[in-house]
Image (cartoon, rainbow, N blue to C red; front, side, top):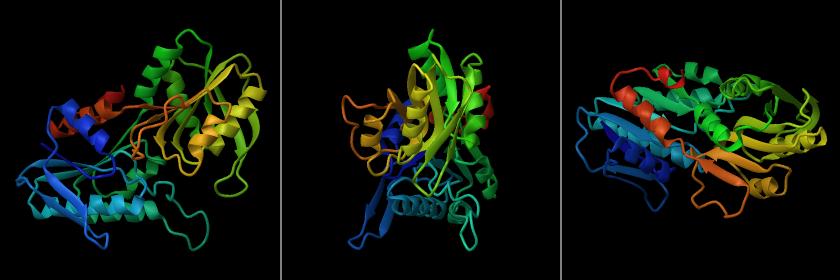
Length: 311
């Protein structure tokens, strides 16, 4: 087994390598003067089971091209099997046609990864489960819920917890986390989005008064939905509001927006690396999912069950 890392999230790749006690494959992933991506693998990978670790986060197109070119280089170097490990799958929110003459970009990206030469895909908390069906190769979708549940139980054990979905579409995810928290009660935020990037909280479905509320979502981008939801929960009598999200996109002024909100803390996994450390004393904290991804990689390499990780 060999691990190859692109430039999108080197800290996570190194943490996965440490967990597996396997060094990262020596490779050069760099840019020419005109920003073209060039990849050169400096080790023999013929007949090897290779895992390419690369999130397709900002800059999305650059990181996607790195993933595709790394995969092509491995295929031409006669790697036996190539698994694209994509902790954060960019373009996942474009998984259907919301209107006429619009693309389904998630399907296009799935086709690109397959044509580049990947034999398998491993990702984390895909925005929509049906994206697994966009691939014509085996696809494993991991969930961060076990890691989040363990963190919540360690920090808030004994408090009157309630899991809250920030929208109707996230109820399944919230219910799954609630079950892991000893069947904690569930509430839903009903919101209406007037235009892209803006959200307006309309109503809280459930009695949140006196509860420590845990908002759960897969992606936090601008942070508007979570901040508005936290304000609405506080107005309805919630004692304190925390948020847990799998992917911290945190674009624009999201960090400042979270800092000024009613949220006590926003916890995100390290599927996305911003390129710099989070500000000390802020409300954003990161949970590492390196052991979870590392264990999944180990099981794929050993041809054992991945789904049993979540039993």
